[in-house]
Image 1 (cartoon, rainbow, N blue to C red):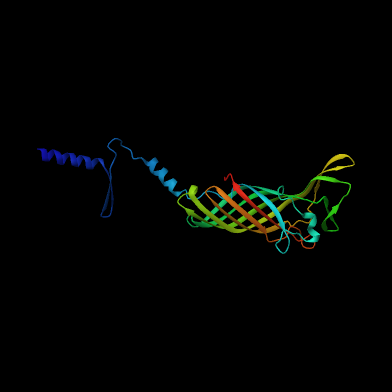
Image 2: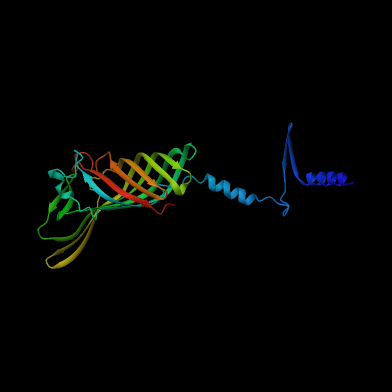
Length: 261
């Protein structure tokens, strides 16, 4: 009788289990004795956490310092470009990168990154000069009647990158990332802004002109970081001004990316 009861209980227990047959293979899923449901939510959460090996590294807010190089890749600008000598502490860039697309080549480890954003560049001039655009040429003119307190060349642009990126790490929060490639920039507007004193009066002046700045600019870029922290650098392969319409100078920027979207 005891043997018969044991066999009956075992048969009943097996019948409570879920069975899946694939060919000659039989899979048995046992239910929890305390619950009639499987914890699918926990399994899903673990799977999603495992897949999260990458976060966005381009989309977000960037803050950098601008500079200008001469054709020999030096910050010592040639004589015709001396009016563009910069105060680096106030020559700043801020970018709002609103969209990013990652195209995997090998899962989250290696892939291509593109996106789009707006960037605003300030070039704070050391010299007390007025940037003028005359006879299809951009140059600086000294105005001895002005005592200039603020003198800036400002640009607003859209930029689109295309970079090869690699991510090394178990998850996004503990991953080393490296990217390199290029960016295409389209200038939306260029202007100068001055604050100065003349004849004892304070003045503010904005001059909106293209100043012969190249509409399309191409730059090399590189980014490196860990987790949410990213350092970036860009170097223009095209000069700031159109050929023979301004001094030959090449912008560069070094900065940090944060607040990723």
